[in-house]
Length: 594
Image (tube, rainbow, N blue to C red; front, side, top):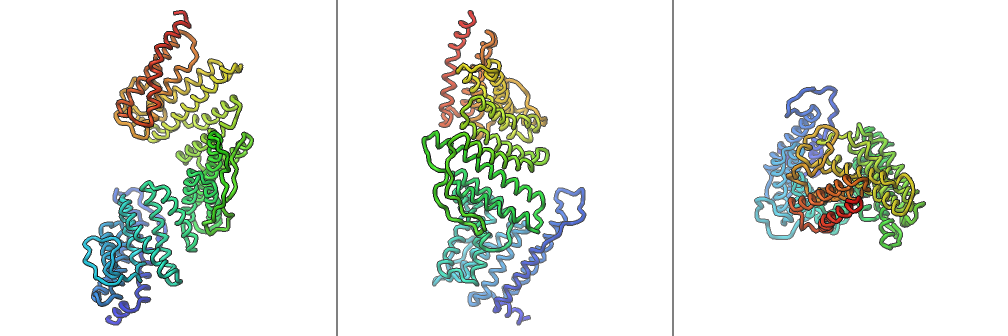
């Protein structure tokens, strides 16, 4: 027995092999059970989960036994045994955390942290109940252990919803990595473990920065994570890799970095193709989802080309969307990032870009059927509606622009009346508000045609009024959704009616502050845009508009938004329109001889 203890104490290879053996027990793959209980209590754990925990408890028992053996040799004069015992505390901490016993896991990890600080002679982040550290030179030769401890503690704090504390540990872990590289380089015997742990560090940093709203840092560390996963040449979840690459593409699009956005999409397409060829069972559903999401990203890329090109054109800026060379960052057999991409200048060019985007979205929609993937189906149709909106400005013909707006409405209107109001409230509101905006624009274009003297059925007074009525209807539906009784509406329809006849909603989410006020203003404007077909209806429309403008101002006061900087222009317009309406009534009276 004593010889075994000496071997564990002195023989590093034997000790590391023992830790690996225990880790294999803990990570043992559990097959899916053939049968499962149909009715189970609330605290019931599925059979597979029970088997996973069984292996973790088995590994824990071995770790506790190993810990007891090493504690008999622990002491300041036995640094080898002290380090080995610290590694056992670390392994036990991981075991408890993975077994959902977070408190006990943190205790073990904190002990490992204190012991590593004592072992190296310096603390990067003070641990709880830290003993005074010895004076003397700092020993960083085993800092890879401390890096792993910091990673694990960062994960604990991140899962608790405290990203600031997690970031502190991860920043310290990154500091260790950089210091190790600067001091020792990447020798073969050190590179594997160190790079594996640093890959985990950058992965967690990407998540933590995302939670803290640091978008630029999150994107940088997401890119680094994807790089590391490819460089390490180890097995990784290719579906997850592809998803992250597509998210990164979206970030670059928002920054108008079309070169890196395209590069990330092509990288995702390459890895996606590997998934489809792989014998690894990701599941047909995951494979289809990856393909669909890649198509969505490609469609968004082309749609953004249209929007950014038009915005720059309007601002008098004429420069290519990509005009410089970027360095390839992924170890993949794909072309380097593109270094040339011209602006879209004319409608013929816009139409070709539009076709590519529409085809990509249509292919994605083929996977996301409404009955099976409701929210994803709506999201893709939303992207398609945005695509129509982005190509619209390039079309000089007003009649064709009206047709394009109708295509936008045609994407959304079949969805109205299909969604459970209470369950899909945010989507119901989105559809209603955007349909109101679409018909508002159609009404404006039809009025514009009429003022130009165009003679066709699309710009008659009746056609203008139909668009205004549709816009008012959808804005009203959006506003009705905020009434108290709609939060429990289990039907697929919002009631018609005048939202000003309902009590002011008690609470209004901050994200809806502006749209709630704007919806009342848009609805009021529809009544003033309608062509007058008779004295009574004209007076009624002006009365409705007056009520809406007044209600918008009342709502701004009720929700303490009168001094909101983003609403000043709209609120001033409300006041001006409300003041002009009495003059409008006198004008109507003259027109009808009253």
